[in-house]
Image: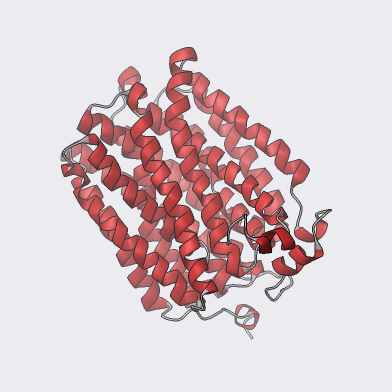
Length: 428
């Protein structure tokens, strides 16, 4: 479904305005997250950071991110998307600005921990908002669209961070980007409402939004969630694919610097190209399964076909280290980033596809913890490989195979997309 179709005009478009708000906060989140990786070669030169020291910064950020994901999953289930996003954005923005006042890897670790805690609340909150505002048949597309904001943020960061750094110093890069998020928070507090609280929402659009069966909010125990196969499909899927994205996010500037001699002033074009490709992949991945559903494919089959397509597109990244030119490497890595985002758009939809609304935030929290644990292991692996071997090849080989393996695991655990009923979660 596109914005220009007559059906959208008749039904209404407020839900797409909400999607746009989510898009912008995800973009700002990734701007903030990318500032450090863009500045890593510069700060490493200024303050003598080691590869393992930087690896520790990434490790503890991901540890906090994983723990916070579980906490925020519960907060969002209990208080809703608005409270969850407000708290998450406030915490990470304060911590992000605090980066300007430290110098060592130990100092960056201490401010990175609360930043990870805050950032962990973003996706449980945005997925919850999507669940509130979109029916299942549009949900993967909406997730793909707002998830594309991550790539926009990753595009913007290498463009504006060098400019700010050259003009006002690296500290200003953290302060100025943090203030942009403060502006978004003000808009969110003023405008966001649930569909039934939103004035001016057409009855036809409300009917569409609430076309899926409605369930009242209720508590659910962790142990109950962990007894379901669907929970483990999501947890293990995130454990396998999230480390790849974390690696691209935190190490690509370093890869281009070491392999092709790219400096701070010239990171922009290759990183912009990669994340534009990732943006396209995010939307196409969500569109692919939504289109298959529209054509009559079952929910599980549509999601898995879309994920398989993305997994195959990631395979060439195994050879990125051997690309004969910078731009060939950019094309290979960009295709893998597009594959990741398309795969993620469908995997992120699994909790809301298979669980009642009141449990999906907790499932997202468990998946976020699992993905962060995988990312933590990957950060240690990457740092040690680079410190000892000095090559990115083992890292790229893992990245190439992770998606096929993740899809295989998901399919083996949930060969059919069987819904988890409220009775199962209540122990009845």
